Image 1 (cartoon, helix red, strand yellow):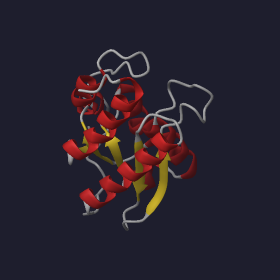
Image 2 (cartoon, rainbow, N blue to C red):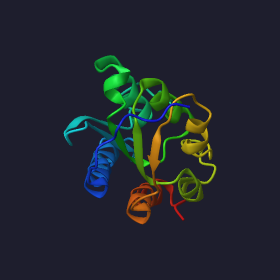
Image 3 (cartoon, one colour):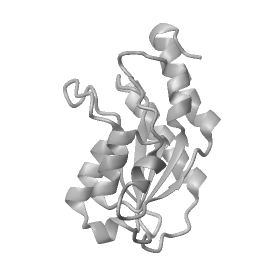
Length: 172
């Protein structure tokens, strides 16, 4: 397994909270409250993405992280993305972790863990959580993706608690 390209020291809490703002905007637009931002090696936000279920016509695969990884891979070469960090309100699911891996993004910093998300959403048909840690997905690859998280997990989880409580009273 290859080592990740030198990754910059960034203010993880600052950028993670920016992903929470994007998640809240997604909620306000009628989507599930997931959001992420992509930060370059100089600390510039180069992309942001909220959950796209509604915008993508009911696409259950339109998770914020997958959409951002797709956009990033179209805009930047993998060697450039190796020095970028994705900050995301929740741990990337197996699908999203695969998209991050294939895009070449070098680091993921997430707020809420998949296990915590599953505790909140249960078996709700709108969010059939796949509780497979992104570290496990990345470890199966041939290149390293650095992972930091969960970080600010209670704050991140509150985005989901609020949404699911308002939706149908099922929040833990």
